[in-house]
Structure formats: C-alpha cells, structure tokens
Length: 139
Figure (cartoon, rainbow, N blue to C red):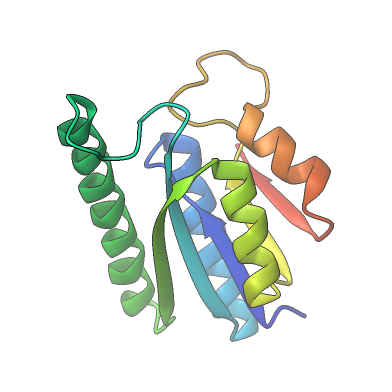
C-alpha cells in the first residue's frame, strides 16, 4: 500500500510517536522511510555572524541528532531511513520534500515543542490542509 513514507520530527513527544508510527508503516509495507527536521527560519534566523548564529547551529545539530535516532531505530527494524535536515518554513519544507520523494504517506505529530495547548499545531494543520496526500497525525 505504501512505497514511500515521510515522517517529520522536531523531537517533541508527539513527533516521537509519529516516528514510531512511520517506522511501523515502513516495516509493515516494506516502504522507503524518509525523515525530515526543519530549522524554523521564523524562529531561528539564518546564520550570518549574528548572535543567533550559535543558537541556529545548536538547533541544527540537535535536529541531526534527532534524525540519527530515527536511523538507529530504523536499523533495529531493518528499515532503511533517508534523512534531511534543512532550514525554512517547516510546513513548506515538509510538503516540498513529500512532493520530491512522492510520499504515499506523511506522518506528523499532533503538535510540536512550540504548541502547549490541546489544539493541533500550526505546522501540522498547514501540512494537513496543503499536502494533497494522505497524512497520519500522531497524538
């Protein structure tokens, strides 16, 4: 049913649940799994010798660490994981990457680190409304 699954992570609890679901789907269907972490350029400016450079670099390093964890979890299930860490608007980067890899399923968390209420997160909401492909929202 699924040949390509994309999971977006920001390291939050809901994103970790999304990773679990994505790994399960990839394992069950023998699908390729792609994982993306987006350094939000609305929250963290692009590095350019500013006081934000250190913080932006730290977020990118943390993102790569989160992606490495997805790869490790995939290896334990014999699921190959391709990763991408990039900068931009998270919902746009997720949708664009889903289009690039022609994802049959996109898995996202209900909300991420920046959303502390019971409402769906803004990134997830925008992905659901604009991706034009099946989305699994992990809660």
